[in-house]
Every structure is written in C-alpha cells, then in structure tokens.
Length: 359
Image (tube, rainbow, N blue to C red; front, side, top):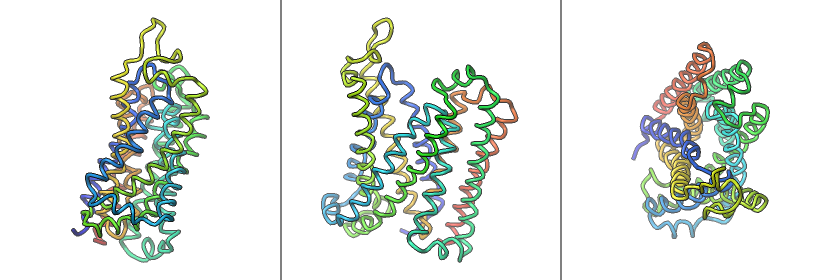
C-alpha cells in the first residue's frame, strides 16, 4: 500500500487527542493516592493493551517476537525505561502546571529531541532534511511547531505572573510554577526516548511485514517492548511510594486516610478501576495511532514525532480551556494562546504537505 501522508496526519491527530485526553479520567478518581491510580492505569497502558492489540493486528506475534535479536529487544526496553522517567514525571507536571502549560513545556523539548536526534544518529540528517525540497519544508514545519509551543508556553508564563495564588489553585489544585517547570524540563527530555525506542525497533517492522502483517500494524510489536520498559520504571517508583505510604489497601477499599473521606465514605472502587482503565487505554492509543500514522509518512517517517507532539498540544490546550484553567487570564493572553494553537495547526499542514511532495 503506497504512503498516504494526509491519512497519516489524521492518524496523528487522533493519537494526539488520545494523549491529551488520557489524564482527564484520572481527575474523577476518588480517594485513591496518586501511586495507586497511576499504576492501575499504567498496567493497562504499558502491559495489557500493547500485547492485546499486537496479538490482534500481527500475524504470528509469537513467531515474530521469537526472531527479534536480543540487542534490538534490549535497546527498545532500555529506551522504554528512560522514557518511563519522562512519563512518570509527565503526570507530576499535569498536577503542578495544568494541562495547557504542562504539555507545552514538556512536549516542546520532546519535539526537538525526538524529531532531530534519530536522523542525526542515523547519519542522514543532511540527506533527508537539507538536501531536498520536501525535507526543507518539513524542517520549516518543525520550526513553526516550536514557535507555536513557545507562544503557548509564554502565555502560560504570563498568566502565572498576573494571577494570584488563590486563582491559580482554583483552576489547578496543586499549582506550583517553579516545581512544575523543573519537572517539565526533565520530563520533556526523557520522554523523547520513546522516539529513540521506535527507531531502534525498525528491524521488528521488517520481521512483522515478512510474517504477513499489513503495513498499518507492523509497528505494534515494537510498542510491546518499549512500553514494557516504561512499566519497569513506573512500577518501581509506584511500589516505593506504596510501601512508604502504606497505600496498597486502597485497591480493596482499605488502607490510609486517602481511601476514605472525613465522613468515612470509602473509595468507589468500580468507578475508580473503570476510570483508570480508560486513562490507561487512552495513553496507549496515542502510540497505537502513532504507529499507524508513521506507516503513512513514507521516507520522512521521523517527522511523525513533530506531528504527534503538535497534535497533543493542540488538544491539550483545548482541554485546558474546557477545564477553565484560563478563565481568569486577560483576553490578550487567551488570544495569545489561540494564536499558538493556530501556529501548531498550520505546522501540521506544512509537514503533511512536505511529506506529500515526497510520496
């Protein structure tokens, strides 16, 4: 099947929507500590969903995985472990900065590293990005993406200066700009390792295609390995917190004070499990659609990372407005945010056009 960049952009937008939405169900979890709901959702996103959908979409998944060289599998898992640090702190960023500003800072850094490092390491940066018209247009799209991210982040910083502490915490319960920015920078750098894990897993795509898997689904087995690495990091940290806080009993409605409110009401277990499963599934589906989108971008597949990041910020900003995180910001700052979103939308068009020229 020939590459179809327009279809690829659509898949990336769906994946971006899934990623921007994943934390929303967590907001409805009642009387569970952070480590409990994060690990519960994570088991779905990092373990259950990758293997289930890879089993559905891959011809002879067991046979394909048995042929993967140990070095390739090891690299995918290693980059997944490093990405896990980014994902772990990504959740903390949402707590401290909110959806709009948190995503802008994290994903801005993630965009630069995740898009440019793979072609630099592979030695074809000049050939792919500088030597052709398509490559230069895609590079322009990356620059426009970064401009949009900077505008959104700057609007968030201006909002932080103008609003009182009470107004900030009314929109974001645990708002802490300084702590949030530090966590966001670390998260953005480490989150880019997912792109490196996908690049390291390219040989697995060939094995999957050889087994008869359709081009849209050949990347699914890679997700099993990279996301397993993320599980290792997140599970280790959550277990440490569970032991320290003695919160394990919350899974069955017992444990620390977080499991009950002042009136003694217990956590709504069924609702909490369903909300965490929804969050975990949404977190996984961003990469499910990412691999589908990448399969349609042709020889400039690495540009998928920029499209993915831009889409997440677009929908993350929309969620920020939906949750009234910007309600107390002056009109000029809200207009600034929308101009940043407009730049990001334009960037996806530019990158898609660059890929169409090369198709």
